[in-house]
Length: 444
Image: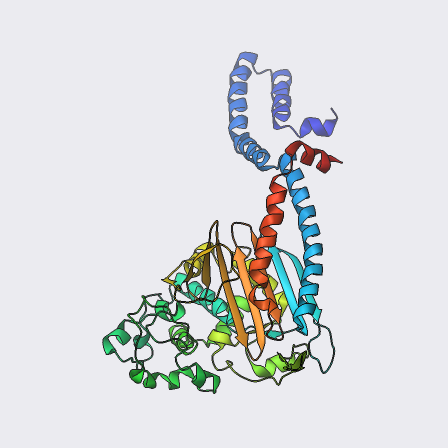
Protein backbone atom coordinates (compact mmCIF):
# COMPACT_ATOMS: atom_id res chain seq x y z
CA UNK A 1 0.00 0.00 0.00
CA UNK A 2 1.43 3.42 -0.92
CA UNK A 3 0.91 6.57 1.09
CA UNK A 4 -1.94 7.79 -1.09
CA UNK A 5 -3.83 4.50 -0.66
CA UNK A 6 -3.36 4.86 3.09
CA UNK A 7 -4.75 8.39 3.26
CA UNK A 8 -7.68 7.56 0.93
CA UNK A 9 -9.21 5.47 3.75
CA UNK A 10 -11.04 7.62 6.36
CA UNK A 11 -10.55 4.93 9.00
CA UNK A 12 -6.74 5.06 8.59
CA UNK A 13 -6.78 8.82 9.03
CA UNK A 14 -8.83 8.44 12.22
CA UNK A 15 -6.36 5.88 13.59
CA UNK A 16 -3.45 8.19 12.83
CA UNK A 17 -5.09 11.06 14.73
CA UNK A 18 -5.78 8.80 17.70
CA UNK A 19 -2.20 7.53 17.77
CA UNK A 20 -0.92 11.11 17.87
CA UNK A 21 -3.26 11.88 20.75
CA UNK A 22 -1.89 8.94 22.73
CA UNK A 23 1.78 9.66 22.03
CA UNK A 24 1.88 13.45 22.14
CA UNK A 25 -0.96 14.50 24.40
CA UNK A 26 -0.81 11.36 26.59
CA UNK A 27 -4.55 10.81 26.55
CA UNK A 28 -5.39 7.50 28.28
CA UNK A 29 -5.84 4.58 25.93
CA UNK A 30 -9.00 3.32 27.64
CA UNK A 31 -10.58 6.74 26.82
CA UNK A 32 -9.36 6.52 23.25
CA UNK A 33 -10.74 2.96 22.93
CA UNK A 34 -14.24 4.20 23.76
CA UNK A 35 -13.94 7.05 21.30
CA UNK A 36 -12.65 4.64 18.69
CA UNK A 37 -15.80 2.55 18.87
CA UNK A 38 -17.91 5.65 18.32
CA UNK A 39 -15.71 6.76 15.42
CA UNK A 40 -16.01 3.34 13.76
CA UNK A 41 -19.79 3.47 14.14
CA UNK A 42 -20.03 6.97 12.67
CA UNK A 43 -17.84 6.02 9.72
CA UNK A 44 -19.89 2.89 8.99
CA UNK A 45 -23.12 4.88 9.14
CA UNK A 46 -21.67 7.53 6.84
CA UNK A 47 -20.48 4.99 4.28
CA UNK A 48 -23.56 2.72 4.42
CA UNK A 49 -25.44 4.50 1.58
CA UNK A 50 -22.39 4.16 -0.64
CA UNK A 51 -22.17 0.41 0.04
CA UNK A 52 -25.90 0.01 -0.73
CA UNK A 53 -25.59 2.00 -3.95
CA UNK A 54 -22.61 -0.06 -5.10
CA UNK A 55 -24.44 -3.26 -4.27
CA UNK A 56 -27.51 -2.16 -6.20
CA UNK A 57 -25.36 -1.09 -9.13
CA UNK A 58 -23.78 -4.55 -9.14
CA UNK A 59 -27.24 -6.12 -9.15
CA UNK A 60 -28.12 -4.19 -12.32
CA UNK A 61 -24.95 -5.02 -14.21
CA UNK A 62 -25.68 -7.41 -17.09
CA UNK A 63 -24.61 -11.01 -16.60
CA UNK A 64 -22.32 -12.71 -19.14
CA UNK A 65 -25.37 -14.57 -20.43
CA UNK A 66 -27.26 -11.29 -20.95
CA UNK A 67 -24.28 -9.70 -22.70
CA UNK A 68 -23.98 -12.70 -24.97
CA UNK A 69 -27.69 -12.73 -25.74
CA UNK A 70 -27.61 -9.02 -26.63
CA UNK A 71 -24.62 -9.53 -28.91
CA UNK A 72 -26.33 -12.37 -30.73
CA UNK A 73 -29.54 -10.34 -31.03
CA UNK A 74 -27.63 -7.44 -32.57
CA UNK A 75 -25.96 -9.80 -35.02
CA UNK A 76 -29.31 -11.35 -35.89
CA UNK A 77 -30.91 -7.93 -36.35
CA UNK A 78 -28.07 -6.88 -38.64
CA UNK A 79 -28.46 -10.05 -40.69
CA UNK A 80 -32.23 -9.61 -40.84
CA UNK A 81 -31.93 -6.03 -42.07
CA UNK A 82 -29.54 -7.00 -44.85
CA UNK A 83 -31.98 -9.66 -46.03
CA UNK A 84 -34.97 -7.37 -45.68
CA UNK A 85 -33.30 -4.56 -47.64
CA UNK A 86 -32.80 -6.93 -50.55
CA UNK A 87 -36.36 -8.25 -50.28
CA UNK A 88 -37.93 -4.78 -50.11
CA UNK A 89 -35.92 -3.54 -53.11
CA UNK A 90 -37.12 -6.54 -55.13
CA UNK A 91 -40.75 -6.04 -54.04
CA UNK A 92 -40.64 -2.31 -54.83
CA UNK A 93 -39.22 -3.01 -58.27
CA UNK A 94 -41.95 -5.56 -58.92
CA UNK A 95 -44.65 -3.13 -57.74
CA UNK A 96 -43.25 -0.50 -60.11
CA UNK A 97 -43.47 2.38 -57.65
CA UNK A 98 -40.77 4.98 -58.44
CA UNK A 99 -39.67 5.70 -54.87
CA UNK A 100 -40.02 4.79 -51.22
CA UNK A 101 -38.41 5.21 -47.82
CA UNK A 102 -38.30 2.86 -44.82
CA UNK A 103 -37.50 3.30 -41.14
CA UNK A 104 -37.18 0.49 -38.59
CA UNK A 105 -36.83 0.98 -34.84
CA UNK A 106 -35.99 -1.86 -32.44
CA UNK A 107 -36.40 -1.48 -28.68
CA UNK A 108 -36.76 2.29 -29.26
CA UNK A 109 -33.39 2.49 -31.09
CA UNK A 110 -33.19 3.48 -34.75
CA UNK A 111 -31.58 0.55 -36.54
CA UNK A 112 -32.32 1.36 -40.17
CA UNK A 113 -33.47 4.25 -42.36
CA UNK A 114 -33.13 4.11 -46.12
CA UNK A 115 -34.45 5.71 -49.27
CA UNK A 116 -35.21 3.65 -52.38
CA UNK A 117 -35.68 4.68 -55.99
CA UNK A 118 -36.30 8.22 -57.18
CA UNK A 119 -38.17 11.28 -55.96
CA UNK A 120 -39.65 12.11 -59.36
CA UNK A 121 -39.72 10.50 -62.78
CA UNK A 122 -38.93 13.90 -64.31
CA UNK A 123 -35.68 14.43 -62.39
CA UNK A 124 -34.41 10.97 -61.49
CA UNK A 125 -33.01 12.34 -58.22
CA UNK A 126 -32.69 9.64 -55.55
CA UNK A 127 -34.82 9.38 -52.44
CA UNK A 128 -32.72 9.84 -49.30
CA UNK A 129 -33.35 9.99 -45.55
CA UNK A 130 -34.39 13.64 -45.70
CA UNK A 131 -36.68 13.50 -48.73
CA UNK A 132 -40.10 14.82 -47.74
CA UNK A 133 -43.24 12.76 -48.33
CA UNK A 134 -46.84 13.62 -47.61
CA UNK A 135 -48.10 11.58 -44.65
CA UNK A 136 -51.82 11.69 -45.34
CA UNK A 137 -53.74 10.09 -42.48
CA UNK A 138 -50.62 9.22 -40.50
CA UNK A 139 -51.13 12.84 -39.45
CA UNK A 140 -54.04 11.66 -37.29
CA UNK A 141 -51.72 9.69 -35.04
CA UNK A 142 -49.49 12.72 -34.52
CA UNK A 143 -52.52 14.89 -33.77
CA UNK A 144 -53.88 12.48 -31.18
CA UNK A 145 -50.57 12.24 -29.35
CA UNK A 146 -50.43 16.04 -29.20
CA UNK A 147 -53.99 16.18 -27.81
CA UNK A 148 -53.16 13.47 -25.26
CA UNK A 149 -50.22 15.59 -24.12
CA UNK A 150 -52.52 18.60 -23.67
CA UNK A 151 -55.00 16.44 -21.76
CA UNK A 152 -52.32 15.23 -19.35
CA UNK A 153 -51.12 18.80 -18.93
CA UNK A 154 -54.63 19.67 -17.74
CA UNK A 155 -55.31 22.00 -20.65
CA UNK A 156 -58.27 20.01 -21.97
CA UNK A 157 -60.19 16.79 -21.41
CA UNK A 158 -61.20 13.86 -23.60
CA UNK A 159 -64.75 14.47 -22.45
CA UNK A 160 -64.88 18.13 -23.47
CA UNK A 161 -67.93 18.67 -25.67
CA UNK A 162 -67.41 19.99 -29.19
CA UNK A 163 -70.33 22.38 -28.92
CA UNK A 164 -68.64 24.21 -26.03
CA UNK A 165 -66.03 25.51 -28.47
CA UNK A 166 -67.76 25.38 -31.85
CA UNK A 167 -71.19 26.81 -31.08
CA UNK A 168 -72.46 26.23 -34.60
CA UNK A 169 -71.78 22.48 -34.32
CA UNK A 170 -75.05 20.63 -34.84
CA UNK A 171 -76.39 17.29 -36.05
CA UNK A 172 -79.68 15.79 -37.19
CA UNK A 173 -80.19 14.87 -33.52
CA UNK A 174 -79.49 18.11 -31.62
CA UNK A 175 -79.23 16.31 -28.27
CA UNK A 176 -76.54 14.02 -29.70
CA UNK A 177 -74.68 17.04 -31.04
CA UNK A 178 -74.52 18.32 -27.47
CA UNK A 179 -73.01 15.04 -26.25
CA UNK A 180 -70.31 14.58 -28.92
CA UNK A 181 -66.89 15.03 -27.34
CA UNK A 182 -63.25 15.30 -28.35
CA UNK A 183 -62.97 11.55 -27.72
CA UNK A 184 -65.68 10.90 -30.33
CA UNK A 185 -63.98 13.15 -32.90
CA UNK A 186 -60.62 11.40 -32.58
CA UNK A 187 -62.08 7.87 -32.55
CA UNK A 188 -64.41 8.39 -35.55
CA UNK A 189 -67.43 7.55 -33.42
CA UNK A 190 -69.56 10.70 -33.63
CA UNK A 191 -72.42 8.85 -35.32
CA UNK A 192 -71.86 10.56 -38.69
CA UNK A 193 -71.73 8.44 -41.86
CA UNK A 194 -68.33 7.45 -43.25
CA UNK A 195 -66.38 10.29 -44.87
CA UNK A 196 -68.99 12.94 -44.18
CA UNK A 197 -68.00 16.05 -46.17
CA UNK A 198 -64.58 14.68 -47.09
CA UNK A 199 -65.31 16.03 -50.58
CA UNK A 200 -65.71 19.55 -49.17
CA UNK A 201 -62.45 19.31 -47.21
CA UNK A 202 -60.66 18.12 -50.34
CA UNK A 203 -62.31 21.01 -52.17
CA UNK A 204 -60.47 23.43 -49.90
CA UNK A 205 -63.16 24.47 -47.39
CA UNK A 206 -62.31 24.96 -43.72
CA UNK A 207 -63.97 22.53 -41.33
CA UNK A 208 -65.57 25.26 -39.19
CA UNK A 209 -67.28 26.60 -42.32
CA UNK A 210 -68.96 23.24 -42.93
CA UNK A 211 -70.47 22.43 -39.53
CA UNK A 212 -73.77 24.21 -40.14
CA UNK A 213 -74.54 21.67 -42.92
CA UNK A 214 -74.48 18.72 -40.50
CA UNK A 215 -78.12 19.14 -39.49
CA UNK A 216 -79.17 17.58 -42.80
CA UNK A 217 -76.90 14.51 -42.53
CA UNK A 218 -78.71 11.32 -41.35
CA UNK A 219 -76.88 9.65 -38.44
CA UNK A 220 -75.84 5.99 -38.41
CA UNK A 221 -75.84 5.52 -34.64
CA UNK A 222 -75.27 7.00 -31.22
CA UNK A 223 -71.99 8.63 -30.30
CA UNK A 224 -69.32 6.20 -29.13
CA UNK A 225 -71.11 3.19 -30.60
CA UNK A 226 -70.65 3.20 -34.38
CA UNK A 227 -67.29 3.55 -36.13
CA UNK A 228 -67.23 5.50 -39.41
CA UNK A 229 -63.95 6.98 -40.66
CA UNK A 230 -63.83 10.78 -40.98
CA UNK A 231 -61.60 13.62 -42.13
CA UNK A 232 -63.86 16.62 -41.72
CA UNK A 233 -65.09 15.75 -38.21
CA UNK A 234 -61.59 14.77 -37.09
CA UNK A 235 -60.17 18.11 -38.21
CA UNK A 236 -62.54 20.05 -35.92
CA UNK A 237 -60.00 19.32 -33.18
CA UNK A 238 -57.77 22.10 -34.57
CA UNK A 239 -60.25 24.82 -33.70
CA UNK A 240 -60.83 23.36 -30.23
CA UNK A 241 -57.10 23.09 -29.46
CA UNK A 242 -56.51 26.66 -30.55
CA UNK A 243 -59.29 27.94 -28.29
CA UNK A 244 -58.06 25.91 -25.32
CA UNK A 245 -54.41 26.94 -25.63
CA UNK A 246 -54.52 30.34 -27.39
CA UNK A 247 -51.92 28.87 -29.77
CA UNK A 248 -52.38 27.75 -33.36
CA UNK A 249 -52.55 24.02 -33.98
CA UNK A 250 -49.52 23.99 -36.31
CA UNK A 251 -47.44 25.98 -33.82
CA UNK A 252 -48.26 23.42 -31.13
CA UNK A 253 -47.25 20.58 -33.45
CA UNK A 254 -43.93 22.24 -34.10
CA UNK A 255 -43.23 23.27 -30.50
CA UNK A 256 -44.55 20.20 -28.68
CA UNK A 257 -43.72 17.37 -31.10
CA UNK A 258 -41.54 18.19 -34.12
CA UNK A 259 -38.74 20.19 -32.52
CA UNK A 260 -38.40 18.27 -29.23
CA UNK A 261 -38.39 14.93 -31.07
CA UNK A 262 -35.78 16.10 -33.62
CA UNK A 263 -38.28 15.87 -36.50
CA UNK A 264 -36.37 18.66 -38.19
CA UNK A 265 -37.64 18.21 -41.77
CA UNK A 266 -41.33 18.05 -40.83
CA UNK A 267 -43.74 20.83 -41.80
CA UNK A 268 -47.41 21.45 -42.47
CA UNK A 269 -48.00 23.34 -45.70
CA UNK A 270 -47.50 23.24 -49.45
CA UNK A 271 -45.03 26.13 -49.60
CA UNK A 272 -42.65 24.58 -47.06
CA UNK A 273 -42.88 21.23 -48.81
CA UNK A 274 -41.71 22.66 -52.13
CA UNK A 275 -39.23 25.12 -50.58
CA UNK A 276 -37.35 22.21 -48.98
CA UNK A 277 -35.93 21.34 -52.40
CA UNK A 278 -35.81 17.69 -51.37
CA UNK A 279 -39.33 16.35 -51.78
CA UNK A 280 -41.02 13.42 -53.46
CA UNK A 281 -43.45 13.94 -56.34
CA UNK A 282 -46.66 11.91 -56.60
CA UNK A 283 -47.01 9.21 -59.25
CA UNK A 284 -49.86 7.08 -60.56
CA UNK A 285 -49.92 3.74 -62.32
CA UNK A 286 -50.58 4.14 -66.03
CA UNK A 287 -53.00 1.83 -67.85
CA UNK A 288 -50.28 1.14 -70.39
CA UNK A 289 -47.86 0.10 -67.64
CA UNK A 290 -45.37 1.88 -65.45
CA UNK A 291 -45.97 5.01 -63.39
CA UNK A 292 -46.47 8.57 -64.56
CA UNK A 293 -45.70 11.68 -62.52
CA UNK A 294 -48.72 13.61 -61.23
CA UNK A 295 -48.97 17.24 -60.14
CA UNK A 296 -48.71 18.15 -56.47
CA UNK A 297 -51.91 19.51 -54.95
CA UNK A 298 -52.82 21.29 -51.73
CA UNK A 299 -55.44 18.86 -50.42
CA UNK A 300 -55.58 18.56 -46.62
CA UNK A 301 -53.31 21.48 -45.86
CA UNK A 302 -56.60 23.05 -44.75
CA UNK A 303 -57.04 20.07 -42.38
CA UNK A 304 -53.50 19.39 -41.16
CA UNK A 305 -54.69 17.30 -38.21
CA UNK A 306 -56.40 14.83 -40.52
CA UNK A 307 -53.88 14.59 -43.36
CA UNK A 308 -51.65 17.63 -43.87
CA UNK A 309 -48.27 16.80 -42.29
CA UNK A 310 -45.14 16.43 -44.44
CA UNK A 311 -42.14 14.48 -43.12
CA UNK A 312 -38.99 12.64 -44.12
CA UNK A 313 -38.13 9.10 -43.15
CA UNK A 314 -35.52 10.55 -40.77
CA UNK A 315 -38.40 12.36 -39.05
CA UNK A 316 -40.48 9.20 -38.94
CA UNK A 317 -37.67 7.20 -37.36
CA UNK A 318 -37.69 9.68 -34.46
CA UNK A 319 -41.49 9.57 -34.40
CA UNK A 320 -41.31 5.79 -34.01
CA UNK A 321 -38.85 6.23 -31.16
CA UNK A 322 -41.24 8.60 -29.42
CA UNK A 323 -44.12 6.15 -29.86
CA UNK A 324 -41.98 3.39 -28.35
CA UNK A 325 -41.10 5.37 -25.23
CA UNK A 326 -37.69 6.81 -26.09
CA UNK A 327 -38.70 10.43 -25.47
CA UNK A 328 -40.55 10.20 -22.18
CA UNK A 329 -39.55 13.76 -21.33
CA UNK A 330 -41.69 14.79 -24.35
CA UNK A 331 -44.50 12.25 -24.26
CA UNK A 332 -45.05 9.93 -21.31
CA UNK A 333 -46.18 6.32 -21.34
CA UNK A 334 -49.55 7.34 -19.89
CA UNK A 335 -50.08 9.79 -22.76
CA UNK A 336 -49.35 7.03 -25.26
CA UNK A 337 -51.53 4.56 -23.37
CA UNK A 338 -54.52 6.85 -23.86
CA UNK A 339 -54.24 6.97 -27.65
CA UNK A 340 -53.45 3.24 -27.97
CA UNK A 341 -56.43 2.10 -25.88
CA UNK A 342 -59.32 0.67 -27.97
CA UNK A 343 -62.36 2.94 -27.99
CA UNK A 344 -64.62 1.51 -30.68
CA UNK A 345 -64.71 -1.75 -32.64
CA UNK A 346 -64.18 -1.31 -36.39
CA UNK A 347 -65.60 -4.70 -37.28
CA UNK A 348 -67.83 -3.19 -39.94
CA UNK A 349 -64.70 -2.78 -42.11
CA UNK A 350 -63.31 -5.53 -44.31
CA UNK A 351 -59.99 -4.08 -45.42
CA UNK A 352 -57.32 -6.07 -43.64
CA UNK A 353 -57.22 -9.48 -45.24
CA UNK A 354 -53.42 -9.28 -45.43
CA UNK A 355 -53.19 -9.45 -41.62
CA UNK A 356 -52.93 -13.16 -40.80
CA UNK A 357 -54.40 -14.08 -37.44
CA UNK A 358 -56.45 -10.89 -37.13
CA UNK A 359 -59.17 -11.47 -34.53
CA UNK A 360 -60.55 -7.97 -34.01
CA UNK A 361 -59.72 -4.43 -35.07
CA UNK A 362 -60.39 -1.31 -33.02
CA UNK A 363 -59.81 2.40 -33.20
CA UNK A 364 -58.32 4.36 -30.32
CA UNK A 365 -57.50 8.04 -30.73
CA UNK A 366 -55.91 8.51 -34.15
CA UNK A 367 -54.66 4.90 -34.15
CA UNK A 368 -55.94 1.51 -35.19
CA UNK A 369 -55.38 -1.36 -32.80
CA UNK A 370 -55.07 -4.69 -34.57
CA UNK A 371 -55.77 -7.59 -32.23
CA UNK A 372 -53.89 -10.60 -33.57
CA UNK A 373 -53.94 -14.12 -32.19
CA UNK A 374 -50.88 -13.53 -30.01
CA UNK A 375 -50.44 -9.74 -29.65
CA UNK A 376 -51.81 -6.28 -30.38
CA UNK A 377 -50.28 -4.02 -33.02
CA UNK A 378 -50.79 -0.26 -33.25
CA UNK A 379 -51.21 0.67 -36.90
CA UNK A 380 -52.33 3.31 -39.37
CA UNK A 381 -52.23 3.92 -43.09
CA UNK A 382 -52.34 7.12 -45.10
CA UNK A 383 -53.22 8.19 -48.62
CA UNK A 384 -53.19 11.66 -50.18
CA UNK A 385 -52.30 13.14 -53.57
CA UNK A 386 -51.22 9.65 -54.82
CA UNK A 387 -48.83 9.19 -51.88
CA UNK A 388 -49.20 6.11 -49.70
CA UNK A 389 -47.85 5.68 -46.16
CA UNK A 390 -47.89 2.91 -43.55
CA UNK A 391 -46.81 2.77 -39.91
CA UNK A 392 -47.00 0.12 -37.17
CA UNK A 393 -45.66 -0.67 -33.71
CA UNK A 394 -45.51 -4.16 -32.22
CA UNK A 395 -44.85 -3.71 -28.49
CA UNK A 396 -44.50 -7.44 -27.84
CA UNK A 397 -41.76 -7.86 -30.43
CA UNK A 398 -40.28 -4.44 -29.63
CA UNK A 399 -40.25 -3.29 -33.24
CA UNK A 400 -41.71 -0.40 -35.21
CA UNK A 401 -41.76 0.31 -38.94
CA UNK A 402 -42.77 3.15 -41.24
CA UNK A 403 -42.89 2.91 -45.03
CA UNK A 404 -43.66 5.79 -47.41
CA UNK A 405 -44.30 5.53 -51.15
CA UNK A 406 -44.60 8.23 -53.81
CA UNK A 407 -47.24 6.27 -55.67
CA UNK A 408 -50.17 3.97 -54.89
CA UNK A 409 -49.12 0.36 -55.41
CA UNK A 410 -49.97 -3.24 -54.53
CA UNK A 411 -47.03 -3.64 -52.13
CA UNK A 412 -48.36 -0.97 -49.76
CA UNK A 413 -51.36 -3.07 -48.72
CA UNK A 414 -49.31 -5.89 -47.22
CA UNK A 415 -45.82 -4.47 -46.57
CA UNK A 416 -46.41 -3.90 -42.84
CA UNK A 417 -48.05 -7.23 -41.88
CA UNK A 418 -45.49 -9.08 -44.02
CA UNK A 419 -42.62 -7.32 -42.26
CA UNK A 420 -44.04 -8.00 -38.80
CA UNK A 421 -44.43 -11.68 -39.59
CA UNK A 422 -40.88 -11.93 -40.91
CA UNK A 423 -39.57 -10.13 -37.82
CA UNK A 424 -41.54 -12.39 -35.49
CA UNK A 425 -40.10 -15.51 -37.11
CA UNK A 426 -36.55 -14.14 -37.02
CA UNK A 427 -36.79 -13.29 -33.32
CA UNK A 428 -38.40 -16.66 -32.54
CA UNK A 429 -35.34 -18.36 -34.03
CA UNK A 430 -33.13 -16.16 -31.85
CA UNK A 431 -34.96 -17.34 -28.72
CA UNK A 432 -33.94 -20.92 -29.51
CA UNK A 433 -30.22 -20.15 -29.23
CA UNK A 434 -28.44 -22.24 -26.57
CA UNK A 435 -27.28 -20.08 -23.63
CA UNK A 436 -23.84 -21.69 -23.13
CA UNK A 437 -23.07 -21.31 -26.83
CA UNK A 438 -24.15 -17.67 -26.65
CA UNK A 439 -21.77 -17.04 -23.76
CA UNK A 440 -18.90 -18.64 -25.64
CA UNK A 441 -19.67 -16.55 -28.73
CA UNK A 442 -19.67 -13.32 -26.68
CA UNK A 443 -16.36 -14.15 -25.06
CA UNK A 444 -14.57 -14.87 -28.34
